Image (spheres, helix red, strand yellow):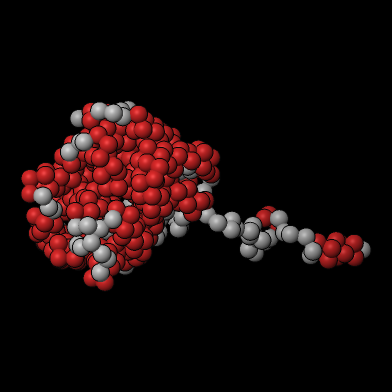
Length: 468
């Protein structure tokens, strides 16, 4: 009389087993997602960085047209760039804390709208103080909130492995933005004019906002997943390695004023030698990239008789190789000692700046192409190892600490942009600026090599937002 039972058992062979009926056997595993949401977030973050990077390509191209139309000196325009760079840097740590407090998506969308507004309003300027307001204040605050700390926050929040590679890819977004915008800005600046170039920058920033609002999720918890590469729930991994604040349980999320948290993190980090070594190195990094090459390479090449569009094309090639170099640096950071990488990067940069005065001419020589390639590979290759050391040395506060280190980067950029402009007005050339920057790079290489090998082996406790 057991045949009906047997036939039922036979019939059930074609049905998926229920968990309670498996008798210890492994149940059928549901099909995994074809793509982890972290990569979608990273892709949108990359596009956001591209959209925000338009202005980074603008000052060097627009300086000459603005001087020709309004008669402003190089020092005045350099001051506008310096204000922008200072705010670009000083906003970063507070933006990191704001992202923890209000979410990555809201802060990013607002920052892009600020960049768009500042760029669009630039077409109305007719006095020098107005360019300080648009280029300096509005775009400075917007780009500061979209600074490289944004890349570190995305990587630390959404990824448990390959963070160095992800930071490298996202950092390359800024270079990609330079590559996308620079040739068009250079062409528009000549015909029909610099105002259309400013509107292009505004359009590039605003076009990304809908994608950010729809696809840029604040944390893995928002979509019910773990960070990419996580082997266990974040709560179980907390004692070994504190995750970013954005992925902590709600009870542990920072509360209160984001500015207080940023300042408290600075207070603790300032007591650690590694912080000052990274800040000093990044100060020089900013001086020798955004401050000098990014702002003054095109005017300097113009002084030697090179057409602006040709010089802008060379700077765009820097952007191409910056993408390659930064991604490669992220890959290397996941595998080698980041302090050694920093020392090598800074020293190679110094050598390039040392010979640059000998390479500038009215035409593009092969030696200039070699410089552009090498400098491009090294442009922001320093970012992944610097962010890695911040994460190693400061744990859950690493993103905010990196924001402060990046602030030093932009202070260096602002100082160099202003100083180089003043030197140009005083001497008629940029030679002393290039040679001084080369010497600074050697100092940065020595400082980076001196960072302790065990930096980060003793992970400090994260600062609480309400602590005194």
